[in-house]
Length: 88
Image (tube, rainbow, N blue to C red; front, side):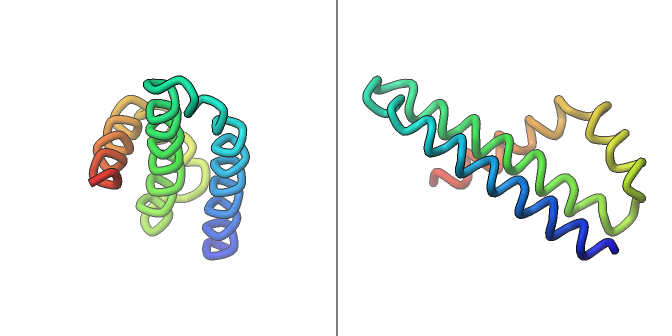
């Protein structure tokens, strides 16, 4: 069940990411908005999917949800750092 849930989280996150990425394409016409929107989307994807993947080995579903709710700031900060490395 853990592997199925992990695949579901990854596919759901990627689907939402690509849908929002496609909708944000017109923002590339306005120079600072395109890269910022892309950075925000990648940060969200990393914070969502990677936090689940990291916690799924040691925590149950309810505990993962609790950590994701309480630790949003640190998860998004980590996601932003990983996103910056993605741009390099």
